[in-house]
Image (cartoon, rainbow, N blue to C red; front, side, top):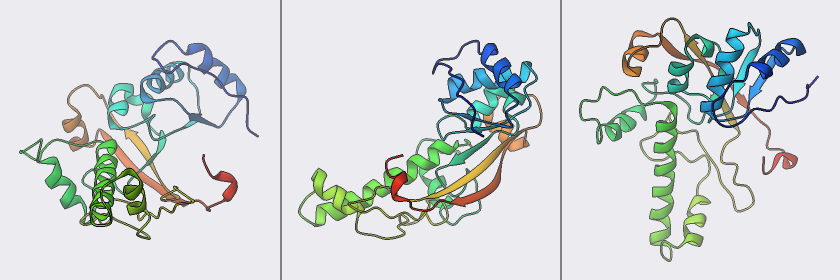
Length: 222
């Protein structure tokens, strides 16, 4: 049974009323559809209200920085990564990501959140599409789009195990239908530097599972 939505703003605020409504509804699961700033407020308010529910978030609604800000209210929240692994994950392509990171962090010690890895993948897909376009009539918008249609199960060079194999076509821009779900684990005070919190394991991202969605025509555009 899907219950009526509880509406809250995109900005941080006092969402105690929504949490009390959630508590009285008896819901087992709740999807956080907003971005991290307001989701943090909801998680904190619901923690204070004693709401016992499994929160699930969208890709923009949760990350390591949100877990740091929300503290123990973020413990157990499940959200999808847009890459196969997080920072420091066991993948050949992580070496490439870390070399890129050193361009702005020569020490190589700064922890990079999940959005950083997704950004690297996006940039390298675009680079390879631009390279193809430049060799096939010029780097126009139309040719760059065609560049994205040239490969199947495409992973940018050097990014194996980080970027999910993706296939774009002129009729379907859903590059991948794999959903890599992770759970945020918070085991102590989150005051202090994110690098230290991640290194000590105070904040962790634990893999839950990968869901392979069917490529249904009726889901096109969602």
